[in-house]
Image 1 (spheres, rainbow, N blue to C red):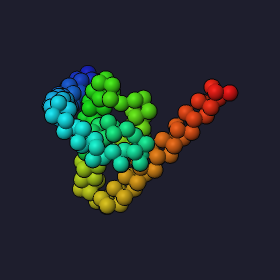
Image 2 (cartoon, one colour):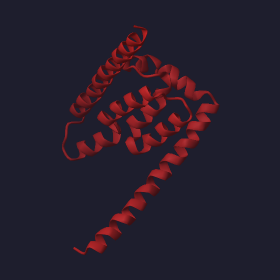
Image 3 (spheres, one colour):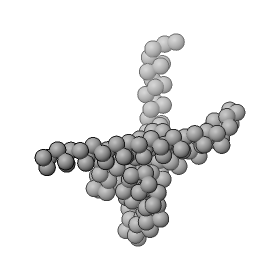
Image 4 (cartoon, rainbow, N blue to C red):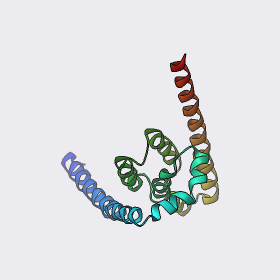
Length: 156
């Protein structure tokens, strides 16, 4: 195969992917701003506050987590970056969000794709979701221990 053809196809496929992501992410950004102004984002955050607390995340992490869970990393990244720039997410929240979403993202789309080629969807979800929860909790507790140790060492 011709290297020029490979480069050309790669370039145009990348442009198409960027367009597709923009078509989804830009309306999501608008929706996020509208939800924020109408205080609906606060309602969503309050509903998921117990779950976020269990995972060691702030309630402000709930919307980016839901977007990443349902739409995946590429689309969720736009919401996460916007939330981080708006000052709604701490570095700790970002780190824990990434741990959760790397393990368990796009649960609807990924599950349907794997089921279509013969995988057991319930088994997939039964492994991915608990694994994401366990990893996030472990890292969250570890971060809390390290923070406590650092603050104790400063006091001594």
